[in-house]
Image 1 (cartoon, rainbow, N blue to C red):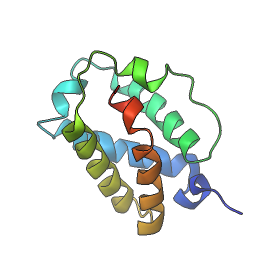
Image 2 (cartoon, one colour):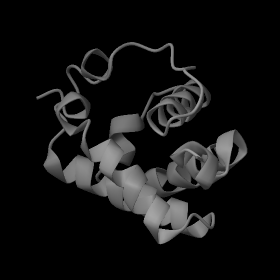
Image 3 (cartoon, rainbow, N blue to C red):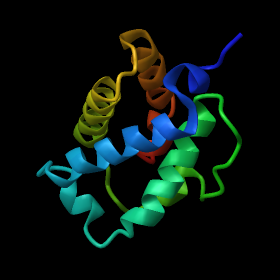
Image 4 (cartoon, one colour):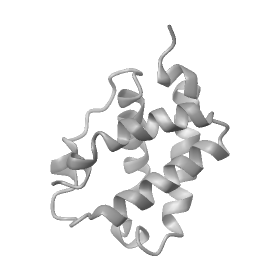
Length: 118
């Protein structure tokens, strides 16, 4: 039985999705300011590992827990919604099926409390 990680295309596909997501974040007036001053190469590596792990891939994420990482950012529902929208679009652009995109977004949504530090 294949995992969501496998269905999406594994590490190379997740890297492409994250690269596309970062392009979208950079042009989003709500999200871009949150990432100002962020080392985006480091953030990319963390996000690729994090998504890979929650999509049933290798356990490579070694960053801080999400609530600690996002502490002090005052992230709100509109921020989460924008990221989820961009992530879904990035997955579609990179050829991830609608079914797998929904499954991926469901997993991200399950972590919303930690992501928003609520």
